[in-house]
Image 1 (cartoon, rainbow, N blue to C red):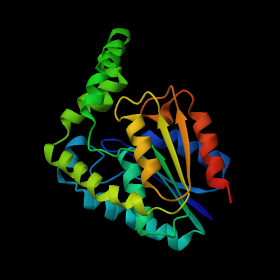
Image 2: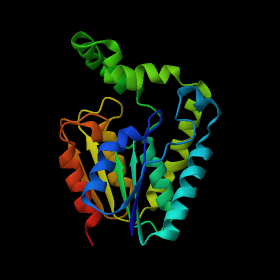
Image 3: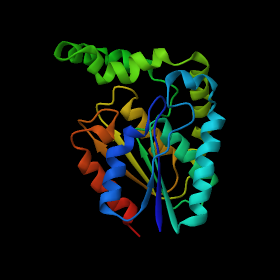
Amino acid sequence: MVACLCIHGYMGTPDELKPLADYLKKHTDWDVLTPTLPGHDKPYHLRNATYQDWIVFMESILTQLLKEDEEVYLIGFSMGGLLAGWLARHHPEVKKLALLSTSVHYLDWPNLVDNKGQLFVEVKDQKLKNSSVFSRYFKRFTDVPSQSKAQFAKMVMQAKPALAHLEIPTFIAQGGMDAVISAKQSVDYLMETIPGPKRLFVMEEAGHLLCQDKDREVLFENLLDFLKEN
């Protein structure tokens, strides 16, 4: 049996990866898991969650999968990509890794500021509460306790060194119109730092939420081809 462990991003939920998880379940007989990171069920719950909690929680699930399944793949989105990289580094039994819109910096505030125009466009065309940029980043980040933001920063510092030790095949996907992280900086860093075989897939017109993009099926097809390759 093959298992895929999918890890969502900071301040996110498994919904970020649900379209991909549904696609994998439809086109394979794999065991696809999308657990919720500790503290991520409600923003204020993040007050008591640490980066160690995120690591220990996902590591416990991964350890069990490695015992039960013949092959295990890791898929991480945004901060979840860093966490997936850390897990792959410390569990070499993992066969393949996929990094989607992976954060390699704590927060790229200049990038957020540069994209405030996107927020204004959305507000003009729809209600503010329905604006994806506002709800996903500007508003939710202000709702998160400051001590949790520090834990996010520690997660970045903990995980980044692990990337230099990844020898397994790695799929790197990035949106060219990412309003949260710098697409070029992220791709350049991952491509230069990860020593193992890599495949880069750039969606030039996509934003940060790759699995929610209108062209997500193309991403899913390429990712599944990568995971199925011998």
